[in-house]
Length: 328
Image 1 (cartoon, rainbow, N blue to C red):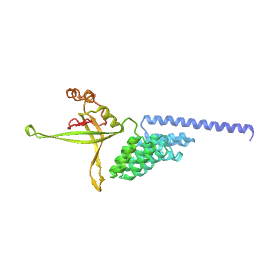
Image 2 (image 1 turned 180 degrees about the vertical axis):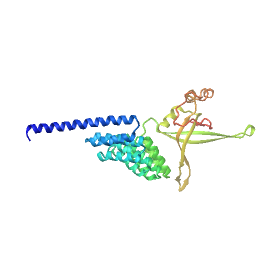
Image 3 (image 1 turned 120 degrees about the horizontal axis):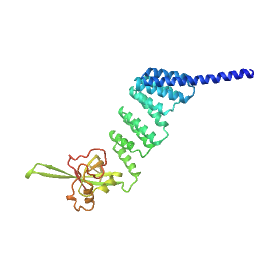
Image 4 (image 1 turned 135 degrees about the horizontal axis):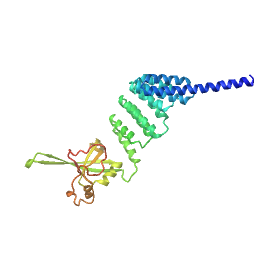
């Protein structure tokens, strides 16, 4: 091949590249036009024509992801969208966006097993501990919905291995243990959490006295029941800071058997652990009680709009219930 022929060959190659780029740009304009007119099948057709022109992996991936989203959200065809996302994984088996989209599509089509595989693949490839832990929690919840308690517990453990400070995973794992009737594992998990808790107080015991009234007038009877609640971590710190003898609280918690052997006989008991506390007193009343009760009886309880001690949960204060009185 002489120099003149070589020059013609190079010119034709460059002209072909420019023609391909020009054609791709024209298709892009056509796709945007059809999107503006809500012609979604034409949009999908445009993406397919564009794919025939693209040779590099990343532009092909971007186009397939866009096509999959249109098929799923606009055309309403999850099965066709699934094929688009699967084509992305043929190019890059570890593509997080495609795995996430594929998991959502498979859940929408009722293919829970395949969705679980996609979520676990995402968890295995996640680089950040927070993301990896959250994905394992997601997998665990999917298994719980299918009634696989043992599988869910295993995934919750994976979540805590990835991020030991994931409180949501720890709470869900405790609930899963209790749901399986494994109170000892739940207690052991809680103990490990307490050991790693940062703060001045790790554990506190709150004696709550609940008053029950029956009848009226001269026949009115009042009965008081004292229950010792165990508080852990931040709840214990808040109780020490905001509660004093006579403080009013509502407590939500759980109880478990606390039996033990003594002198060859079984001693039966119950242990109460607080999970949520509503502080019902106003800030002024709380401070008065912590200062020894001076003037506490004359301080009004918390009214609507008045700032009280912090509520330890998102539940509404149960002011309609008979509040318990906390004794230090």
